[in-house]
Length: 548
Image 1 (cartoon, rainbow, N blue to C red):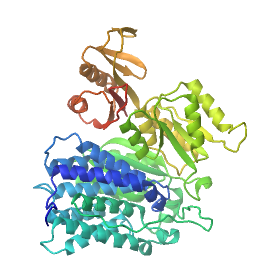
Image 2 (image 1 turned 180 degrees about the vertical axis):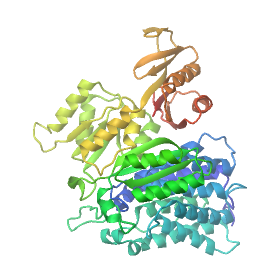
Image 3 (image 1 turned 30 degrees about the vertical axis):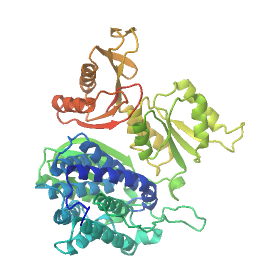
C-alpha cells in the first residue's frame, strides 16, 4: 500500500505510546463516567492514563534508533510496575504481549496478531475469575478479528480490523454483564482499550473511523448515576465478601517464581475479588485484589516474594456519594508547560504563572464544584492559604451563594502534589480523600537543584554566584561549583534514607542529558530503585526530585 508503513520500528512504537497517552487524556472523563464494574469509583480512565504514562516515560529516554524490542520491553516493565487499578493491570499485559511479539524484529501484520492473542492469553491467565463483558472479552474479540484477516493483509488492515472488532464487542458488553445493562453503559476498561487500538490504526498512517458515542448512565433528572457500588460476586460464597470488601491492595513482587505466583493468585482469590497477578516478562510481578483485610493480602505477598510499592486504598462508597461521583474539583498550582500538563492529565485544573492569594481565591471561586481540594505546591505561605480558605468558605460578599468547601493540602512542591493527585479518589468523601492525598504528599521527600543567583550564606556554608545548590525541602544541603555533581550528591543523601521510586521533574534550564545522567546514577548506585523522569519546564529548579 503506497505511503503506508508495513512495519513499525522502535520510534513508531514510541509514537504509538504517546498517541495512547493523548487519546486516554482526551477520553479520561468519558471512561471514568462509564466505570460501574467492578467498583463504581469513577477512576478507570485515570488509572489507564496513569499506567500508560508510566510506560511511555520509560521509553522516552531510549536513544533514537532503539529497536522495537527495547522500546516495547521498557514500556512493558514500566507499565507493570506503574499499573494503577484493575484496568491498569490488564493494560500492562497488552504491553507485555507487544514486547513478546517484537522480540525478533519490528511490529508487522503477522506480529500484531501474535501481540493481541498473546495479550489475551496473559490476561485470562492472570485473572482469578474472568468475567464476560469486560476488557478481556473485547481484547479477545480484537485478537479474533485480526486473526480472521487474510494472511497477506497489510499492517494497517489488520490493525483496523482489530479496532473495528473491538467496537463491535464493546457494544455487546451490556448484554453480557448485568451491571452494565442496568446502568446503561458499556464497559469502561474496554472503552479504554479501544483508544489504544485506534492509536495503533493512526500510527500506521490510515484514518481512524468515527466511533460511536458512549454516554454515561443518567436518571430521569439527567444526573449521572452510579448504578453499581459493590464488587460483583464471583463465587457462591462471595455475597458476604462483597459487603465486607473495603480495600484495593496492590504491590510489586520480585525474587519469586511461577509456582509461588500461582499459589499467591489462589490465596488472594480466597480473600476477595478482582484478583489479578501479572508479570512483566523480566522477573517482575504486580498483584491486585479487592478485599476486606488488607493486612492478610500483604502477608500473602510477603510469603510469595519480595514486596515493594505497596498501595492500599479504601473502596467503601459513602452514602453521600453513592449516587455518583462527588461534586469535587482539584485545583493545582503549577509552573512550566510540562508540569501543568501532568496535573491536567491527572484530572486537576491548573493555576499557573505568578500566584497571589487573590488569584488563588478567584480560581477557587471560578470552579463549578462545591468541594475543592487545593494543591498549593509551595506557592504561598501557610497563613495566606488559611486566609484564602476562610474567604472561599464564606462565599462572595459574606453570602453562602458562592461558598466552597475548601481543603488545602500540604504539598510543598509539585512532585509532592503529583504524588497526592495519584491517590485522589472521587468515590470517597472529601475529608477521606484529602487525608489519603495528604498522606501521599507527606510520604514523598522532595528536593531540588538550583543555581545560586548571588553569593549567600547557607546552613552548610557560603555559596558563590553560579554554584549548584542541592535543597531538601527549603534547606540548602549541598553546594558544588558543578551543578551535575551537586545533583548526584543530593540524590545520594536523599536515597540514603531509603526509597523505592524517584520522580525527576526537569526544569526549562536543565542541561541537556541531565535526566538521563541522574537516572543512570540512581540505577547504578541504588539497584532496585525505580526512576521516572518528566519534562516539567519549571523556571527556577533545574530539577525537582521526589522520593517515595
